[in-house]
Image (cartoon, rainbow, N blue to C red):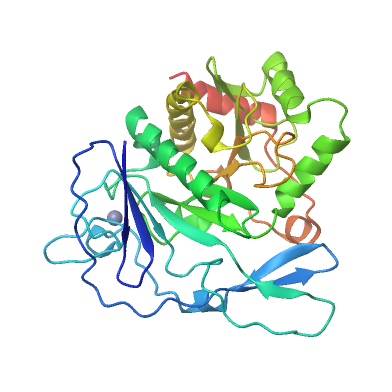
Length: 357
Ligand SMILES: [Zn+2]
């Protein structure tokens, strides 16, 4: 694997991850770009003890048409068109988001009154292009290609963890128009947060109070029960959690407890690829329509509770039937109290029958 760091016209970093050592990465960004926006500010909600990022500049994001490859900013550049990626082809590429929720580009911020502390939204947001093929999807990537994406994730996790002020690194993919994705090109994002996220705090708090190893026990119990296991191999298990919140939700755990993607062995990365893409294909085959989903890597915080945390992926869709989406309405949005219309055992059975095909 070859890694090449370059810069875009406005100074943002762009990093190529290439399978071939002789890949030519000398192409330069020929565009004239506006200066980068300043960072968001963070405001503290004393009632929930959570930080909220105020990223007003994101409102001015240019609307990107979906689907059309000849206007896609994530496709490689060509003689006649300059995109976010200067090269004419690439394997996997990562670059800093043009409209980040967190960045090293500090703005000014001031006391806003009330009981809310304010601080700059230090951190970094990156875009990961999983492939140069516009009309592909993660589920269609070869095992080799997934391996390269995993190398990129591991590299970025290690690198971003080293930025001063960063407390957690989150690699994720939002897929589908129903999730609000305007770019069809297969891509994901990486957020380096200046705080430990609320979800991780909750999970680690529960792990701390539990007598024993909570994550390992959940995995062992699901493997023992078997009824909700969707797919597994020697090193990974994918299962629908017993108390799933979403109609179709699958958690993927490595059998060995590691804090983050950077700590996975080569064998573990290799074994993840076929398992994960088979689950994604099962998602798409379920109703014969593209399944919108969110795929989220839960990693240990950078500085705290690393021995407690257990790297795992949480994948879920908001589609509960053809033409029917699960919306977060009153109970979920206002109270955080989920109601799931699909029994986890039934969801697992449906997904398993697609994986087995
Ligand atoms: Zn594209």
